[in-house]
Image 1 (cartoon, rainbow, N blue to C red):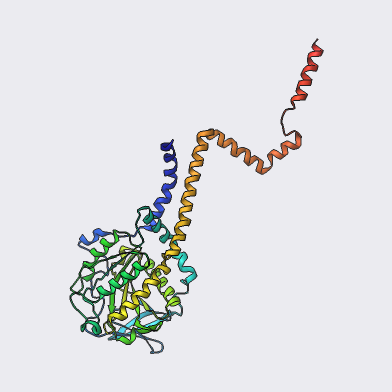
Image 2 (image 1 turned 180 degrees about the horizontal axis):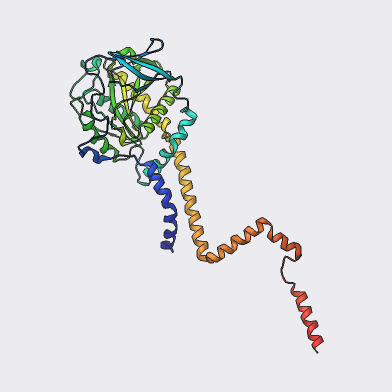
Length: 405
């Protein structure tokens, strides 16, 4: 009996399982590290190392938009703190000219939409984690292992940079919120054009554990006034999100970054400085929820960066629908649907064995006929509903017998 039940239930649920796995599992390709060729935008210097920076300038008004130590190219775009979108049109030395393309780049990512956009992947991943008895997981690593904060360490670069301590702060904050955290201490020095090639193996290894999110921790290299802010009475460093233009998950990762900023704007206004969609890959082709986060700049302190880590660890679960309360509700609803499907499959199996296919067809045929009024028409012709009157039949038979005699 159990074997027959499995033969019916498992095929019925298999499409759902496959669809769930497709949406829930991170799209990672660990084998690419061993290839001789790499994705476009993986190799190269994507930030300035000469101590200088670019000034993004509105080509229409000449007003300064922001500063960036990131190497920029024509077509790169930037969403500023006010959610205006800018596109790079030309570069003249240290001046990068941009034109405004939108006054509200987050118009389609308001908070009422964020949960809905993130929910399906989060719910399915959570169900798979529950099936494997695995907790919600976040992965963290540092491609530029040398990045440090001058006010804390007296230098902007060292063998084991302060960014690892920012990673530790993130780990602690996520764990407080019920996440398991994989923090890699792999060192990817030197800070050269192949840094992302070396960190690619680290990212692929972390993705084997199916994290909901993978974060590459960095710090910027512009003047400190670009990043200093006060939130809730605490002086801390802003953060900046970076998405690579040259990766196949660009749209998913950009949507993820916008969801983070939309939630941060609501809960901690001023925390997110902006979002760069810039040339480069940043290993973000490996997963649809991969993000590079810059915590402050070389002129802000480590303490200011760790305070920002506390806030972003609070924002991220809410923005992705993986906060403890919402994930439990989502899991309960999804589990309910799975149980209902199993029950329907079991009932169907029992009915099939009890009455067979012909019995099921006859049953639904009668119900269908009743629904369209066929039965009612028959009753109009035969007040007794078509049933034989046994008394009349008996009297007729007796009467006939008397005539024969």
